[in-house]
Length: 134
Image (cartoon, rainbow, N blue to C red; front, side, top):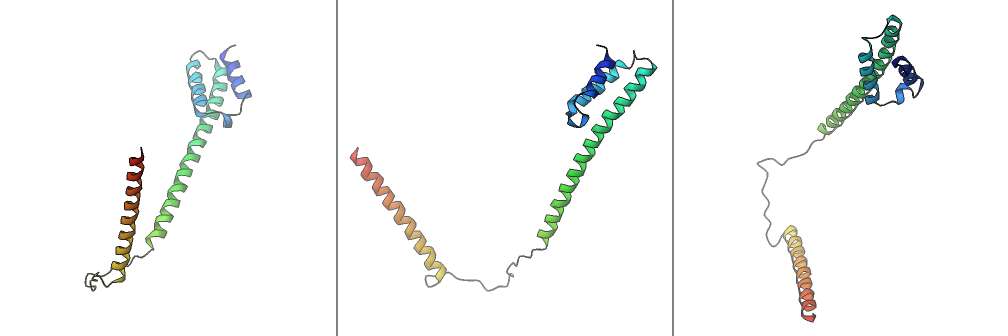
């Protein structure tokens, strides 16, 4: 089979939209390799087919680029929406708080610490007891 028949079979088979980019680039390369030995009629056909392939590759590239631009715009919108959030930071001249034994925060922290200590002590004791049984 000569190259023109192969080229026609390529276009008669799977549509260009369903072919992957590597197949399209490979066919463009094959067309370029066969232009030196082509006559006027074959060159016209090669030119038309190469144009169809490059149009398909370019449309895919544009679609990918517009998809990236849409994603960038979405990220910028999210950032802009987040920049409207205001976080109140206490002023440097704010009254300092003291956490002594009478404060609720101190009491809660002390109770949590004791609970953690008791859990670890019980766990350690049960491990020691299990080890002595072996």
